[in-house]
Length: 518
Image 1: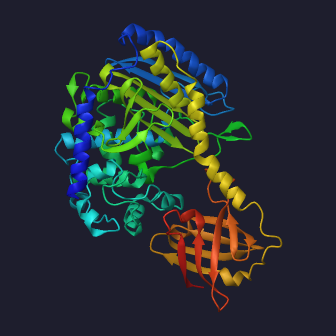
Image 2: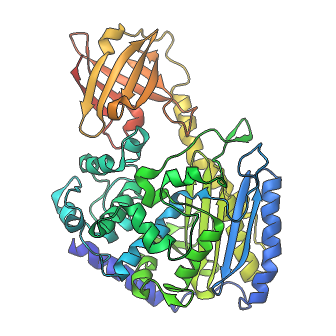
Image 3: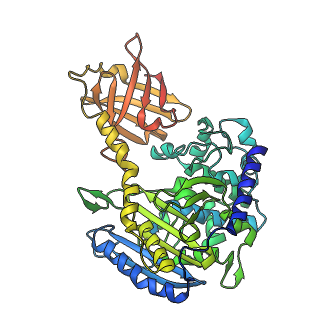
């Protein structure tokens, strides 16, 4: 839409004009190599304390300045209760820190003339559809990397959870109603960005994972980095995912992120990510050689969508192409965080004017350690002292991500009415149900309860426990195993259920399936 593009252009112009007015940093003294060097032992002590205090089982940190790696170290353990230590080469699942890496890969394709940031998805991947024809025809790589396509943020995540592969998830996004007008709203979408990356790779005739390897990982010597889960599993020196169970970190759940590899499926080490940071801070130049044209890479760091104020630091935040752009207490920074609620937290923060960057990888969730250490390091570099306990401040943000939703679900389903209405015979509910988005679902009897099977060939199975009347409960999410979800039936005059609503698949009002057979 022309208006949307023009508004975005005005935002970029305002941003560029504002750079000259924005204070370089809050510190009175310039940032020097000596100040940075003085901050490193204090950063190391903070990291050691975080592990010793049980804030995370393990973490790795890398710092680059003026194209040199000046700090690189691991702390703690790859898996709680086991002796293997984290080092600079330990491979972590970096979650959404994958997004700026994927943006760098696409920038390399733009640099080579394979695509432009404004190439239309309809030209690159004609089979892809949004719900409405106009945005489908106008959608660009830029739109998907800035999360302004109108796709709701969770669209596709639900299908991934029940076992669908990337191709099928992307095909089914056409059934999802938009959460905003095209280019009018920001909605952080894993599978939207994934489609942008996959489409950008189409002209090469190669899968995204191969393109990422050829355009970025291999040229930078990032031998431990991959966008394939199988490669991660093959690494002996890899970090497990951890969640807190009864106050103790435990490695309970594994996470295969292949369906959304460009958005969340990169696995890498602190050592490898230092090479990527050198390239980004070098404006596309690595080891004296231009690998990516500066204009193609700079596009990723122009703000496209306004996000408001950072909830902890108070800085003004924007989203670019796979990057967060912040104007904070220390001036301009680029960065991105990553999180799996089954046990990963990561962050990268770059200060482009100072040619300074830090990456922090951890193997636990929830924790604010990555941002906490990154913000503490920035305080030390720019001000010579840490302003506050940033780990504690960020802990509150991540602890609150899932806690309220879990508490609300528990409260809603704490106890059925007294007395509860009885369930109907299992035969009333048993049968086959379907809709275009979720696909097929089967309900069958099992002992005293019911079993729900969804996904390709019934890939996921959920036990249903009667709660009240035609409402049953299940616990579908390995990431939040104590969070109940309702599964309800609509029963017609014939005593048979005509429809089922699966609450944990209903975020975008697509969890209602109609009966299609017995």
